[in-house]
Image (cartoon, rainbow, N blue to C red; front, side, top):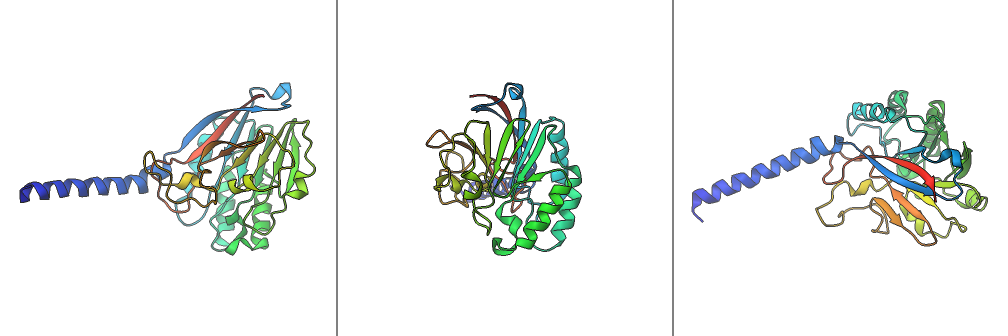
Length: 279
C-alpha cells in the first residue's frame, strides 16, 4: 500500500472510531425504547385482560448523567397511561445524601399506574457495600410518599393481581422465604426481583409464572452477534429480554432506563409495557 493510501485509510478508521465513541456516549444512552410484550398469566381475573403493566428498572439517579433524561423519559412513559407500574430496583447511584435530594426532584415526575404502583429495592439502594440499611430506609420513605408501594420480602394484591416483591439478593435484607412460603398459587401472581441470579436459588416453593428483573442493563455494550463481555450476574445466560426457566417460570430482564456509566452500544435503554392476558 502506498504511503498516501495508508494515511487516508488510517484517517478514515480514526474517523469511524471517533463517531462510534460519540454515538456510544451521547446518542444511545438516551435513545429510549418502549418494548411491548404479551404477558399470559395463570388465574388472571377477566377484568384485567388487556390491561397494561409497565416495568421501569435501574433508574440510577445520581451524578453520572443528567437527571433531565430521566424526567423526560418519565413524561414520555406517562403518555402510555399504564394500568400498573412496577419499579424493579436501583433507584439511585448512591454516593452521598445528595442522592436523596436528587431522588425527590426526579420522582416529582413519577410514573404511576391507574390501578397500582409497586416497587422493590436493588443493590445500589443499600449504599456502600450494599449494607447501609439507613440509606435503603430513606429511599423507601421518599418513594412511598410519591405513591409507590415498596415491597421488601412482602406481597400485595392490587385490583386482583398479586405482586410478590423480593428484596435485593446482594444486600442485607434478602429473606425470600418470608414471602415465598405464603404464596397462594390459585391467584394471579407476579414476582419482582432485582437480580436475575435469584432464579437459580432454591426459594421458589413451586411458583409458576413471571419474574420481572433488572440489574444487568443488558450489559450496556454488546458486540453484534456476541454476548455482552461484562454482566454482573453469575449465570451469563441472564442478559436481557425473555428467559424461559424450568418449572413453568418465565423471567423478563429489563435493559434499564438509566446506566452506571454514560455509555451504551447495541443495548438501548428500555421501558417495558406488558399486555396482560389469560394463560
